[in-house]
Structure formats: structure tokens, C-alpha cells
Length: 166
Image 1: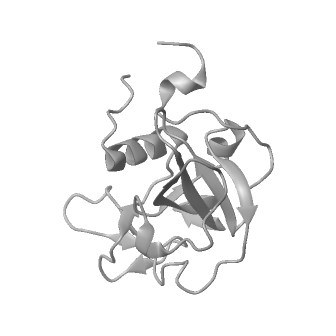
Image 2 (image 1 turned 60 degrees about the horizontal axis):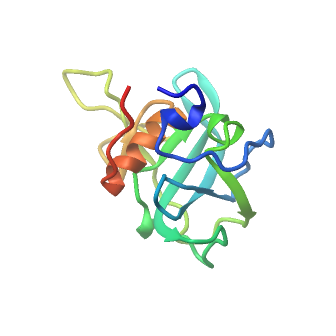
Image 3 (image 1 turned 30 degrees about the vertical axis):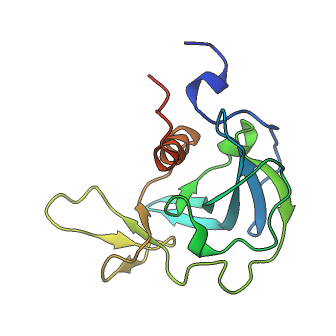
């Protein structure tokens, strides 16, 4: 395996940034051999159990040859379920912020649902602020902090790209 980070993922390194993501930011990521896919920062104050200030984001199925975002990013165009992560996808350069716009109606799900896999005997679901939900709401992500590697795996799976070998 190569020693640089790009060998760990199908996502190409674009432009590392130390700037903290903000709700409303639009970013791009680019799997090897594909165009740019757009993502959106929905919140930067999400919580998972005791972890605070997690970034709630969407990745859309819109593919482009340029980093210019479309006029509208609808929740009807999600590539994967909502994800929660930290700043590493930006600081490592896998995500590059390309624009900032306030979230408009229809650009944010009314409820974010995350399946808690730690309970084996019964299903539990949470929103992005540690509030338990009465049941599953689709789309439903996993109640965990996603790393840039697990985000890469989710995007690769959704696009039918083989995962990077360990």
C-alpha cells in the first residue's frame, strides 16, 4: 500500500483546508475516475452520545465535470443517507468547500434518523441531537461518527466502485 492518504480511499485529495465547515457550505468530493459529487454541510453542532460539535452532512448523486454547484441541491437527490463526521475530510483534502448558501426549504430533511447498532435485542433510532425517535425515518444513517474512510466506503458502495483494499 502506498504511504499517502490517497491510497486509503477512492476519493482523490483535492485541497486540504483548516477552515472549519459551516452550515450551508457546499463542498465537492471526487472518486477516482469519476466527476465531482456535491455535498452540503447541514449542521456543525450535531451530537452523538458524548461527542459534540459533529458535522451533519449530505452527499448528493449529482455528478459534474466542474466544481460549480447546481442552483439547487434537493434532499430528493441524496446519494447516501445523512452522515455525521468531524473536520478530517476537509483538513485531509477529500472535501473541498466551493460555495456557501443558506439552506432553503426542501434542502433539509424534516427529521434526521440514525440507527443505533449497539442494541442487539431491539431497534433504536436517534436524531442528530441525541433525541430518541419513536421509529425509523427514511433515509436513515448509522448512529456513529463517520471517518473519511467510512464516508469513502459509503460513496463507493452507492456508486458501485470497489472499496479500497485494506
